[in-house]
Image (cartoon, rainbow, N blue to C red):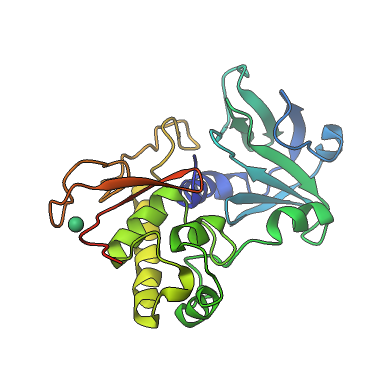
Length: 271
Ligand code: ZN
């Protein structure tokens, strides 16, 4: 599943090149997770101003309104002048004067949704409950600690829920908790301030590293110019059940938390 680093790498791959482009046509394939929310023909003639990101949504700002693009479970985006003919898994083409932006999504949990602005109920529904961005100033260790003191859920599930901080998906939550020496099952309200400070730093370090490496989690993730952006992260715990911990050689354990796999070292993450 594309996570925040992959989405940000995707954004950086085409944002500058599409800025200023005029839309010729929007072509829809099979239905995605949600309907577009406007007539595709009404996008023609609009100008693309810029592309930003909020959580795992790409926001394509137009002269009137914006498109919210989500990669779902298996989506990837390409932007190029001469793309091959649309295939069976290509479900959205935005044909512009600078090239075509194409969403390829075999499982179709992705979406492209039009909103008239950030206050449009459609945008509020998708973006309104998102926590702060993990790599921006709003992610403050003191506020993070204060918010965790009110949460009784296991810390791993609090991170995955994305209501306090966005973008800490399954891989990055497991890795950050290992780096901080925190057991994934510990309740949020039982973490001391020093431990929360460590976790805060670990989340930022893990995400920055993934961003620097070009994203990590989608097997068929491809950069926006069609080159493979897949990077097999050198994980400390994720996907390593039964293998020796890289720090202490204790076999890594795997448990289920809320339908998701969690990996940890019982020795390095005692409590
Ligand atoms: Zn260990």
